[in-house]
Image (cartoon, rainbow, N blue to C red; front, side):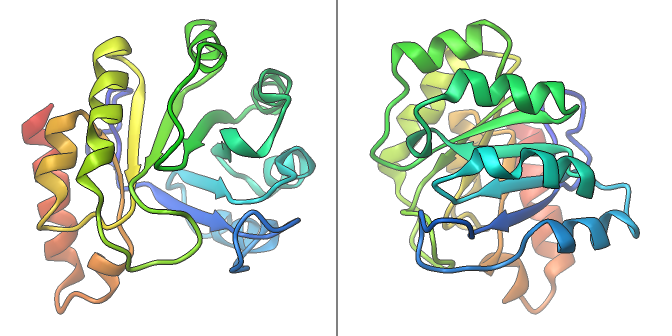
Amino acid sequence: MGGQSGCISTLWTGKKRQSGRHFVPNLTIGAPVVSSLREHTEAVLDCHLMVTNPEDYVGPLKDAGADIFTFHYEATEHAEKLCREIKDAGMKVGIALKPATEPDEALHALIDAGLVDMMLVLTVEPGFGGRKFQSAVMPKVAALRKKYPQLDVEVDGGVGPATIDEAARAGANVIVAGTAIFNAPDPSKVISHLRTSVENAA
């Protein structure tokens, strides 16, 4: 879902690439699937790479038509260089943080320099769906929102009708939801609920 950048009414399509050298045990999709999706939609394709070698995928995902390239801060020692490569490729930059990772001075410097378009805060350890939302991560979301009012702040992990209000109140304006939507009797109703909660908290 969109946010501060003017996309509040847009449903983003997030594709999780859990591949490359293993940052997580599960492997899912890659650039060929993103390319196939791009042929059929103008929706925002937000690619969350759970890999230890995100630098290797800038070119392939650019060519596939990705809009946002989100990598794990924990997965690279060259975050600034990678951010610049992503920007130069014409994609927006997202940086993901595992639940235990707090933003450090170097990360704040990247945001302050305009090299980061979105922060993704995971409320669960990455790699598997259907896990329980961790409220303890919400202060991190709130701190990012307070310091960077115009930054897109995304939350992923256990987000659904029972937890969306807490995430939205903390300042999340981009939401990732999988299990809550795909396991729902009426997925469109759940999507509407999530969107309305984010809009009401804005």
